[in-house]
Length: 142
Image (cartoon, rainbow, N blue to C red; front, side):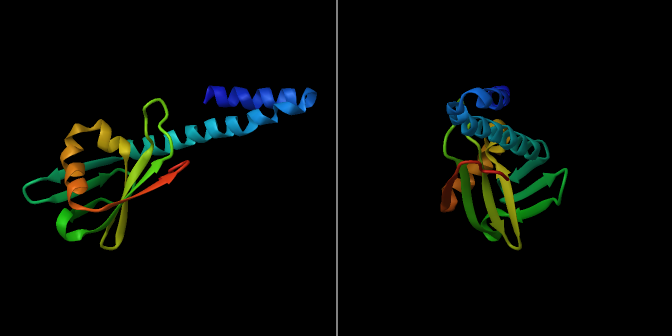
């Protein structure tokens, strides 16, 4: 992010002298885009908790900002999509799961799946029992 801001300032300062520096402008916008993408996913990560009961297959998704959802994996899920970034940045893949349940669409970032081992059973169950449609985007903003 700092590099992106530095490149924008450098581009503006050097644009006056050398017009060939314009190739730095798209790179700096791309780096700043990842700042907004990280903030978007991190804010969703902080505000969301998943509670999964493997015996009854009931899921409760608790959200600090927004509605809480309760559903059964095998009865209520209609479709599952994975929207992910085209590239991994330093081993970090941005993306999210879009789960369509009756009347609602839930969006769960990859960070919830990767950073909280409690949720591994939930995501393993979804992966094994549903066909997951994968979409690639440059900036998968939730």
